[in-house]
Length: 290
Image 1 (tube, rainbow, N blue to C red):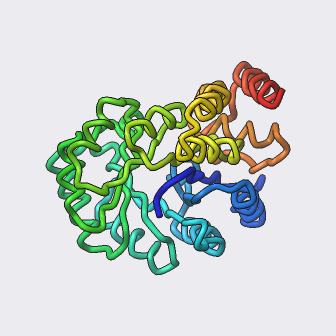
Image 2 (cartoon, rainbow, N blue to C red):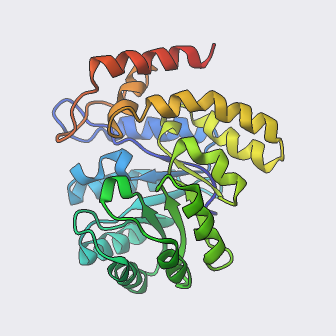
């Protein structure tokens, strides 16, 4: 089930910083209409660290309302506290999410043994399918292929969102892990290269803006239309570059406003996109459909 383009949803906020669930529903409906394979609620793109428990629950519940045989729902449940992660992962299953995305603990910077034991305990305590999220640039720790391979032997750890930016590391993960273990690209600009070495798809930020095109990369590749997939990759690359000029989701929230699909303001501690980068995002998106 874990394949294709899974959009890491933005969490919309009103001017008073409250959740805007009506806008969230509109965004999910747009994603489904454009043909994405899945949606991720409460990932980093959804400003999950800024959500309290009640808000986190409301966002996941809203996403789950739209799951179907064609569209799967992942809930971001990871924290840097093992017991808290277990609590949220259990809650995600109770609400009805198909899978849980569990980030490597940030700030603590556990060693490889600590990472293994953390994920092992979460998997053993929670009867849901778990996707490891490895994003060293944000957490300060890189889960090595050997550790991923060991965790792949645990039945309900089904895959990894790999965002180290290293194709050699992704290659080693796929080579060393149990057969059937799934790798999803965690970087939009590397989706096609990672598909070529065996990835199942991408958990995408830019698909908030360009969902149909990100899904097309996957579908074209699966149809063995490699040249067309490469052309779409090249077409999307400037968007991927522009929407990571600053910390995610700062640029993508501005981009959504620019394309008239406003998802509201950012919550502190994130600040508004710089004027210089606003101009660049506008330039790239204005040229995208030319």
